[in-house]
Amino acid sequence: MIRLRAGRPTAVAAVGAHCDDIAIGAGGTLLTLCLARPGLRVDALVLSGGGGEREQEERAALAAFCPGADLRLTVLKLPDGRLPAHWEEAKDAVEELRAGAEPDLVLAPRTEDAHQDHRGLARLMTTAFRDHLVLGYEIVKWDGDLGRPAAYQPLTPEIAERKVRLLQEHYPSQRHRPWYDREAFLGLARIRGVECHSRYAEAFDINKITLDLGDDPCACC
Image (tube, rainbow, N blue to C red; front, side, top):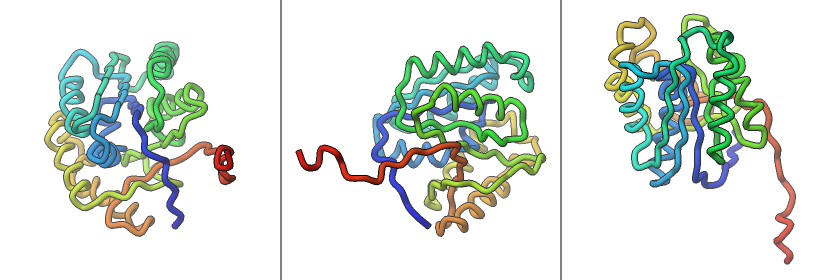
């Protein structure tokens, strides 16, 4: 297992097609980042759920998942499951996010996600954020679309437990779903932990990454 560090990010962008996507896919990573870097700027965009109970849940949840952060959250009202029919609105929202943020790290859905809203948003991100490290998070679901991730963020047992507790606490509208439970979330985190020699982890896809393995050009100046 090779460990590469992405420096010390001062700004992160996180996007989700639905309220709870970001927290499910990358909640542990956000907790890890924000606890390690107080004042971290987090620009978050969610395409659906605006104006109702779901938006209220999302605002409370992301505030809890980003403790001490400079959180800037936008929740839109695109209809759930209909992103392909609202492509221009989604694209405009992503471009607006890009224009207002210069993140060191971008958290987004996987391009191979089976859900059309997740997949569509993921493809928008790779065109809007061309020169950024974009990590594609995974969401467990009945489609059975989990793949072979390329990047892992180890989670301490405390962070993994905190993530699950916050998911249960802040999204009561989702508790009735058969996949929305402690065993599913911790089970996947445990499997990803095994794959990276950690107790727990979140895993991500990477579409493209540029390496700079040479000497610092200013090192001899």
